[in-house]
Length: 119
Image 1 (cartoon, one colour):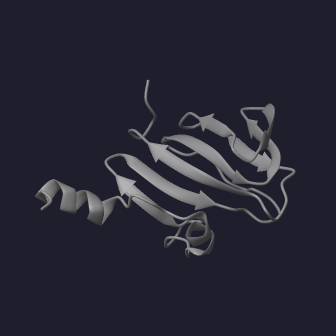
Image 2: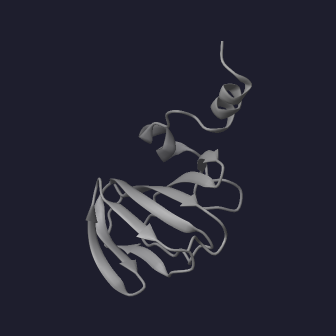
């Protein structure tokens, strides 16, 4: 028999989110991405821009894990080639975008910490 805490964790933070499900999940209202998991300050989404990436800086620290595809990640003017399996980090408020990616591109997005980022 589980504890009350176990029940709360199961209700708010699934143990598994399939890539196939993330790809077809509808975006959250007013967002470009679906919210797939939320626990404490952690927020997990899936981002798959088409054509171009017009995002603006976010108010929280952010980690991307490339699920599929390849391209170039631009962060504060620096350019980094990426492929599936790579991890990318962006501190809160830093301009960034994806370039030179194809239709197969998709990334897990993890926001965490307080507004303004961790120090």
